[in-house]
Length: 258
Length: 307
Image 1 (cartoon, one colour):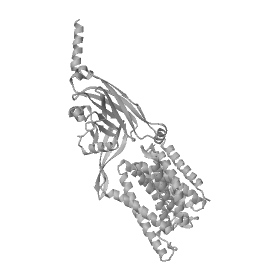
Image 2 (tube, rainbow over the protein chains, first blue to last red):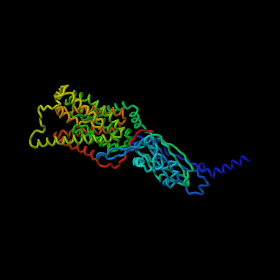
Image 3 (tube, rainbow over the protein chains, first blue to last red):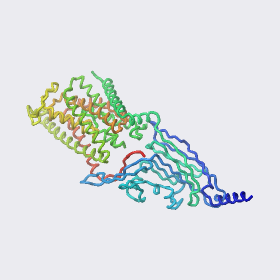
Image 4 (cartoon, rainbow over the protein chains, first blue to last red):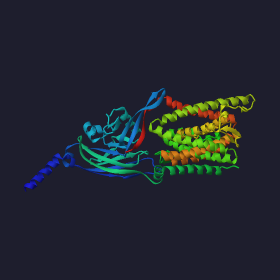
C-alpha cells in the first residue's frame, strides 16, 4: 500500500513536472532513399507526423511549435576572400570550415527566433545563426559569432546553392496535432547519410524530440561512373581517352568524302 | 532535357552542351585548331568547376584532333617524325603541367593562374596574329603575294647543335627548339585545358620554318597524343574527368568540325588567320576584364574533403 502510494505520487509528479516525457512525437518520411539518377533535378520529400499531446498542456497553452533540422554528411570547405592585389582580384584570405554539414535545412512553422529564446536555440543548435559551424583558426577549431564575415559568407554561399536553407513556413499544421514538413533537395545535393531531427516546442520550451534518417545515393549509371573515376582512375582515364579516339575515328569514317 | 553529370555533380541541359560542342567544333574545324581555349571558359560559364572543365576538355580535344589527324594522314600532309620528336618533350611538359595543376589547386590559386595564363597567352598571340594577317591582307590589296617569302633567313635557332633532318617537312633543324616547343605546348595544355594548336602552328611556322602543307596535320597529331595522355593523367591523379560530359561534347564537336572545315576551305588563308586572331584576342580580353573588374562576390567556397 505504501509502495503503491509512492508510485502514484511519482507518476503524478512526472505528469506535472516532467514535460520531456509528456508528449510523444511520431514521424514518417515519404521516402527514406533519394536516388540520384541521370535525370535527377532535385526532389522534395515530405515528413508527416503527429503529436500525442499532453492533456494538461494542450488544454492550457497555445498550440505547439515544431522545428525540423535536416543535416547532410559532414564535409570540410574553405571559404576564400578575394582582394585587389596589383590591380587584379586574387584570393588572399581563407578560412576552413571543418566537419560542417554539406546540407542543412532548418524548417519550422514560424521564425525560430519567435519559437524560443536565443540561449535555447544556441544550446539546441536550432537555426542557421545558431548551428555550430566550427572554423579552423590557427591551431584551434572553434565557431565564431554569427556575424563573423567568413561565417556569413559561408552560409550565404551555401544558401545560394540551395544547400543551406531556413524556412519558417515549411512546416504546416494540418490539425493542432498533425503536421507536415516539406524537405527540398536541390539537384546538387551531396550523397550520403542524412539525419533528421524533429523538435517540438511549447511556450518556448523543448517538450519532445525524435529523429529519423534518409540516404541520398547515386544510382545506376551515375554511380557506376563516379565509382570508376574514384577507384580506378587510371583505367577510367584510359577508357575515356579510348572513347575519344573511337568517336574521332567514327566521325572521320561517317563524314569521309573521298 | 536535363542530364546529371556524375563527376561535375550537377545537372546540365544536354542540348545546351551538345550545342556548345557543335559551335566550338565548327570553329575548330574552320581554323584547324582544337578549340579548348573556347570550350573551357564556356564550361566554367555554365557552372562546371574550372578543374573539372580543364580535365574534361582534354578528352574532347583528343577526339576532334583525332578526326583531323586521320584526314591529314590520308592526304599525306603530316610529318610523323617531327610529331614524335615534339611529343617526347610534350609528354614531359604535360606531366609537369598536371603536377603544377594539382599543387596550385591545393594553394587555392588555380583559378588565378588559369585566368592570368589565358589573358597573357591569348592577348599576345591574338595580337600577333591580327598584326600579321592585317599586313598580309594589305599586301594582297596592293597586288603582292599574300605570304612573304623569307628565303634562307637563318636565325640564331638554326645555329644550335644536335641537328636533325625531317624529310616530310623538308627542314633541317636542331633538336633543342623542337623539344622546347613540345615541352611548352604540353605544359600549357595541361594547365589551361587547351590543346595548344593555335600556339603550336605559329611556333612551327616562325621558329622552325615548317611548310604550311604539313604544319596543321603535324600539330593535330601532337595535340591528339598530349590531350589523350592529359586525360589519362588528370583522371589518375585528380579524378576530375567527367566521361558523360566529355561524351556529349565530343559528339557535338566532331560533327561541328566537319561543317567548319568546309567553311574554312572556302576562305582565303590570311582572312581566316585574321578572324582567328580577333577571336583569340577577344577571349583574352574577356579574361582580363574578369580579373580587373571587381567580382560580384568577393567570397567563394572550395571543397576540401569529406568528414
